[in-house]
Image 1 (cartoon, rainbow, N blue to C red):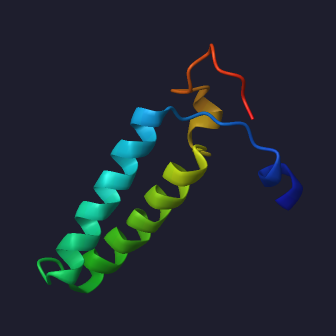
Image 2 (cartoon, rainbow, N blue to C red):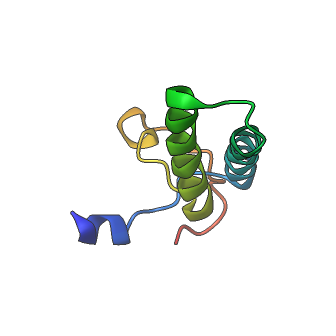
Length: 78
């Protein structure tokens, strides 16, 4: 399984990645300014971590079963 993760193809475009990272930044700001707290804050921080990770690697595992890709077709996939 780890090997499959190492050879995953990008399926997220630049805009998608930027939006995910911005949403994660908003969640982190809300948490560190104590606007959100408790269980909701914990769940949102986990979600923010996932958004940051997927945003930086340009790969979303949830897109695979649905065949979704926001990655431009004219670029070479790495």
